[in-house]
Image 1 (cartoon, rainbow, N blue to C red):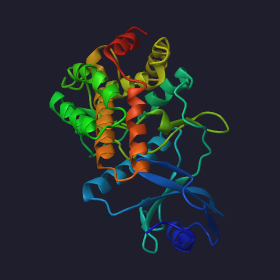
Image 2: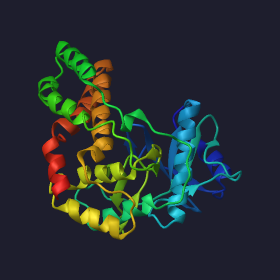
Image 3: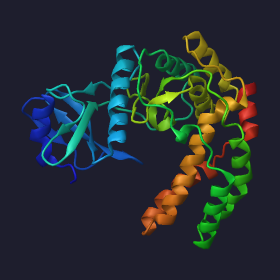
Image 4: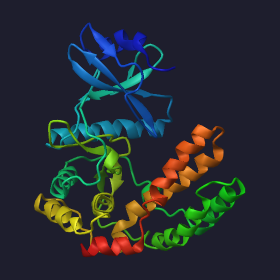
Length: 316
């Protein structure tokens, strides 16, 4: 059931937000895994995210992500405050819908050219948060797609005349070659955000950075998450990588990027994102769905990560 204004009284009561509230007419932001509505109340403005019927394991991940976000805020990391219910829960049943809330923050659009010193300091702060989570390693960040699966996808895409099939096929040898960097044992493990792409690290309207969307948090190697930061914010100008790393180290970040194997997280994650975009394109039943998922694939096709770029980031 979609969220609408009729659910506002239940949300206000569940989260102790007073007697008055106004919900935005539909989502004001959306992503691959859900949409955000804005709720203005006498107690402030809130981002409202609907929680569907998810498996127990996924629910546990959402709850741990919220707890890690709370711990990060308490440690001084700039992130929106999580709003708990009157009963201290993260999620509330509100008249046939389940929702969770965090404080509303006015954000600029995603920007991969954010100040590298600010980015390095923010990630160091995240990696210093004292938090012992229970969500373990995930193959999405560690395992290859593999040559066989890439071959299957390309064949299926060609059979369906996917407009990006030739471009992706030309990149598969590089994708497979980079997957050879996967499999080395992590230097260390701690709860990480695991999704620090530019969509989730933004400059706020009144200055400073803000990190949000902790839904994918779990165990990872902080060195590999730092490498993801270098890929996202420094590929266009590898000289920025040295500024990020220096700021990160100066701020006490524990990770170090010293070898191509440290790039395992972004390599694996980007590969799985592309493969999932292909799978969804093949499963799509409308032109709009196919166009949406083609966009997902083209985010990589138009800006591919390569071994040459990894070497440039290490040198930078």
